[in-house]
Length: 185
Image 1 (cartoon, rainbow, N blue to C red):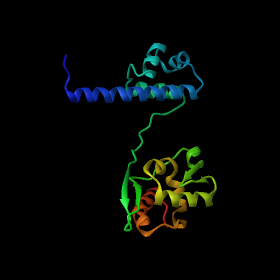
Image 2: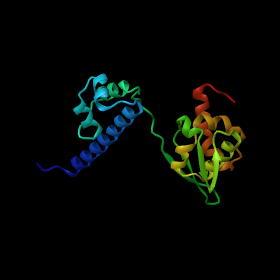
Image 3: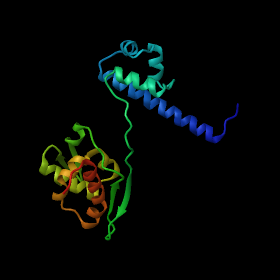
Image 4: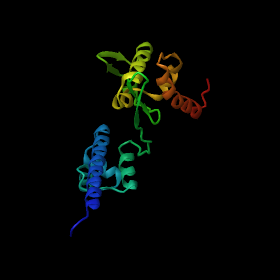
């Protein structure tokens, strides 16, 4: 049977998601210190089926995926995608602004980041302030999404010394997040 170019692309997308889903199952299983047989047993599936999911040979339904992850101690959740848009200041410097403020795992939010050759300890408030200033002014999309936590940014926002153009682009995100959280200035 001959498939159309669109069917081939969709088939490739399905294969990519099957591999990613398999990786999630494997990560959850390892984090729970379970072998395939044990996780399959507590999740109500067979070891061979779980293996097929982990290796991307099969794709589970959402219900099955949720049941397997739950058995490993995790939840299947819907999380809004965050994308960054490039902006340019009046003097030609490029900076990026996310579509929404991301929340990070604690280890990432309070870890160490290197920006423009300098390491910052994000667990230290003063260093986090300096790092966020540098990241908002110079950080690429990946750096922003990996190291700027929305809640910690809101906490520091009024203390950050930023060029007006950058503050103007990020400000609505901060104000929207404050409003959603019921935090007023």
